[in-house]
Length: 249
Image 1 (tube, rainbow, N blue to C red):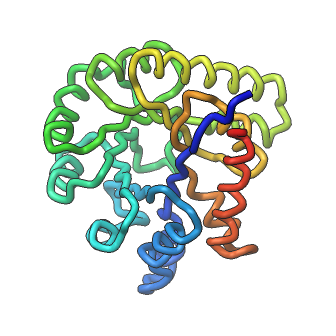
Image 2: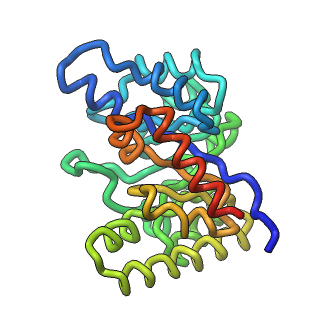
């Protein structure tokens, strides 16, 4: 079997800011974490500027845009405010995600099929500005086809349910979800979309998703920041990089 080629790793540094904000201190610094991630082999940095600014701040985005050498993927809701911020900073990519104030983390994929016209209008100025638009969605055919129709460059498939089933010991559901993700990745690639994946991935769960030949990038954050407590951020990222590379061969 031929190797599948390099799989990019985007490191989400949101929860460095979560720790900082818990005390209202200026540390730990998300930009410092992003630079450590660069040194450890990250191909890009992801940061979610939420409407309520619960972790990443506007100041963080300014610092990341000025200080990074690798691309910045700005996760954002489909709001006028976030569109204006993206157009002002012009990050490499903007990943549009669903967002609810009461959720602890992003709970599911974006309903592109149910808001196709609105989302098409929303992403048009981003595309015109040269920002690579990604849509964070589930593996359902209707969502993938709608993403292709409105002109997104990328879909990021939500791997949260697969990971949840794994840790709940529900192996049949886990395997079924993994198969559906594989089908979704193949469909998206056949429609000309670049395929990314992320949410909840860990050392135990990353291998099967990393092995999908259509997937070009994984975005991983919460687990790596947690694991950094035990082995340091660079060590945590290097081990994830090793497992991803192993899965590709």
